[in-house]
Picture (cartoon, rainbow, N blue to C red):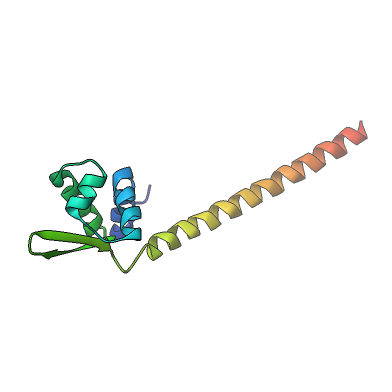
Length: 119
């Protein structure tokens, strides 16, 4: 198998694989939040939430800004455009393969009907 060499996509999909991190992204899509607010919302320790936010930051999905003792999180402006484009490309490939399979099945079904008429 050939390794896929897009570290940003790997980091993004790795970050998105966790339901808590997906929940954090959904929450930040509605409003910016501090790490403390996120920890409270998800019933986690501050340390646990800092780790989740760190993974999202490394993936380029979230940015944080520290003002005084408060670290505020917000969605990264780049969004998920690259990830969505990759998913769309894969969807098109799968659609093309299923269309080809449907053509084969239709051909075989027609051939089966023709053979039945000959008997």
